[in-house]
Length: 48
Image 1 (cartoon, rainbow, N blue to C red):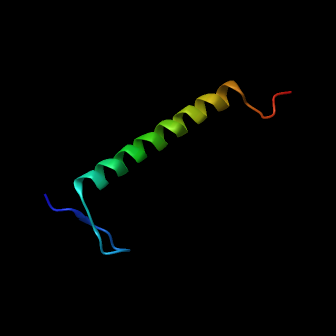
Image 2: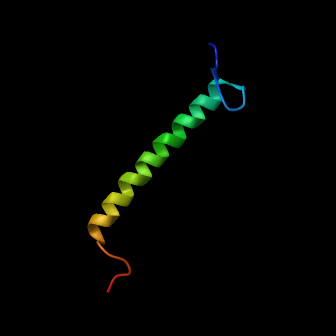
């Protein structure tokens, strides 16, 4: 498998780099989902 080339650095990503980046994306999406859920339960901050 050929790696993905980065335009900025010219470095080729290996399989582990791509896998790690995918895990970061999943973690960020889950964080955003949880933040929306929290915002529904606690509409304003600080709680009065």
